[in-house]
Length: 78
Image 1 (cartoon, helix red, strand yellow):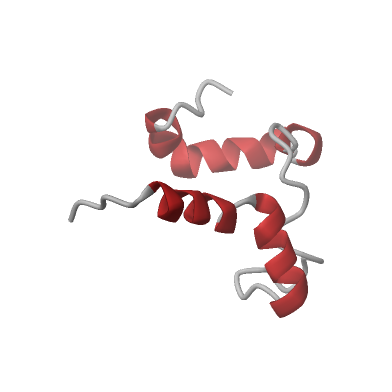
Image 2: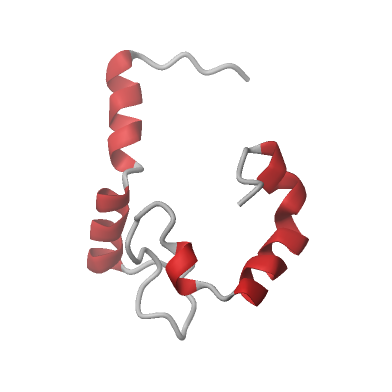
């Protein structure tokens, strides 16, 4: 299926998927993907923030589990 959105539709889709908009929706309505132990799902939205939060072991687990896709989309090397 090929999508051919108008400029207006594309701009709206981008706005609706922005971090600020998603965080606002979560605060208002919750977010079902949020783990029970997490205060919120959308935390900061800052690029590279994971480096300050994840341990090397956690990073390795992610790479072990998702390395192929991470490589495909340019996330490797870290």
